[in-house]
Image (tube, rainbow, N blue to C red; front, side):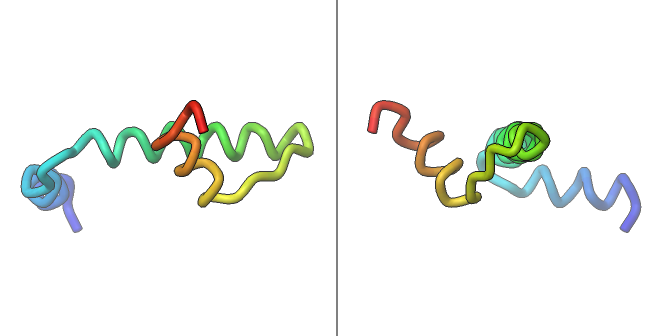
Length: 53
């Protein structure tokens, strides 16, 4: 898949920020693991959706 094709497909996603936000969450998870703090993807997304819960 070329960059132009990827850009075209990304334009079809209604809320492209979702992709960007998941990259930041994944980086935070990976960074935490280097400090022996292990969390699941589910926990990350729950906190991202409901920060006060």
